[in-house]
Image (tube, rainbow, N blue to C red; front, top):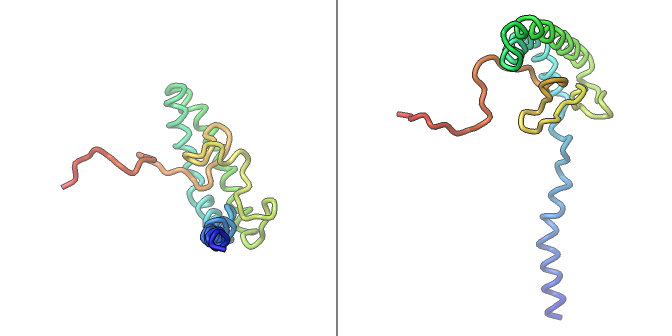
Length: 143
């Protein structure tokens, strides 16, 4: 009898841990409001792809390639991003991408650290100009 009570108590205590995984599936963070915000940011800040790609191509291939290939690639990415922005603006209430509100970009999320494939895919939100870091610590002295 004591063994049965200990086993039942163990199962009862583990049930909360096992059931907790079911309550928030991975797609629950993608909502209609997030899709609307993504659409507005893609429309407004989509042109930031042009200087972003100029800088990236400059670092990867040199200055001439940065200002030519980077400008052309950045313009192409900006037009795709703005197009996706208008598409998502008009369909933000509908789960259009495989029945979810996830972004419909191809190859999105192949690099889990920054959630984008910088050569082919688009990130969920437009890039930011300036210094970016993915680390929350620094060695700077704060007064």
